[in-house]
Length: 299
Image (cartoon, rainbow, N blue to C red; front, side):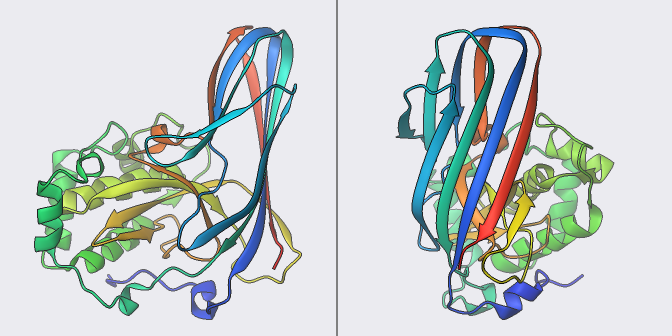
């Protein structure tokens, strides 16, 4: 197996140019009856980083109510609101415009961080939350032993790349095969899942190998090469980042390094820390959910 993640067409063509992308994410809840009240948190606003600039963003609601915003413990921007009147449905629409730039390639890294430095960092407790297993990222003993056997002797970036390619080769992307509560170990045993599962498995393997790792929630523009003005149907996406002197991305679903097409919304230990929309309501016992994501390359 190759020790480096496959380079996609878009990665081969990436230059210093930035992409400007618009994201429109709409979530609609319809209750089987009336809801008398609800409290909600939305994590759909892209972050600011060295590789990403958020130029504009807004969250709209129907029915309309006041919003308040804050940054959570993990650095994700949260929009919160409560609806204290009868309603049969709730629609949340988040629209943002971002500019993205290429991520550094592992081969271009000026500083090769060795395992000793990573061990010192983890032993200091500075990244303890990203080294400790969670329910969704915990792996069983046989799989952990297999990870250590396979990546032993590799440097940190080689180990991460190997893990990405291994997962991508073993797992089948099958929408509906798993749910939001599925553990990475369960998805691995079935060898099927979606990006959330690929990411939980990757995080579990990276942590087993000795690399602090975190979950990234965001979006992926689905077309590798396109002219400005193209709008695509999309969906929320997830990938992983590992710490090796800095944070580096790893998209095991596609076996690529996150770059121009990846839009970061937030970070956490696992999916539960950065759910796009979560809330509670008082009223009808059943509800239906519809989600639409449209991504447009503007420039």
